[in-house]
Image (cartoon, rainbow, N blue to C red; front, side):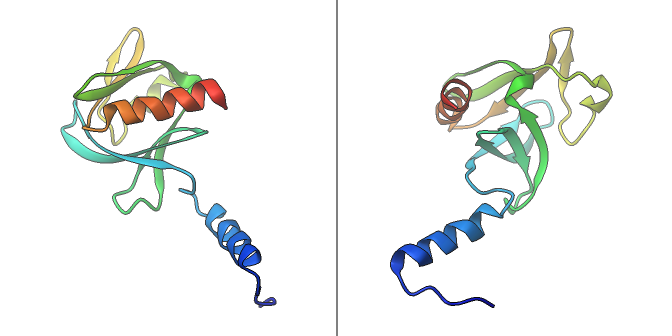
Length: 127
């Protein structure tokens, strides 16, 4: 136990420091249905990449760093990305990926497709 802060600024600073310790701190959440598996997922975007979270949004199950994403885009109905993973053996996972000779193509149906695109664009161009 430490001293209990008394000023508003110190309390806010302590709160943010506690939050930063959480694995999912600073992530933007999106709800999507993966086209190939027809399953619903919680997708998160932060400065480190795109992450697949558990349904409670407390644990990261799978991550894709921005360096592994060749291309990405969005339409009114879905967000898509083409992933280049060096270890092709890892393609089988919770996601049943659509594989091709250009990498792994992921199609995520979501009403938040353009918001997801904006977060990925900002993270890849401004950070």
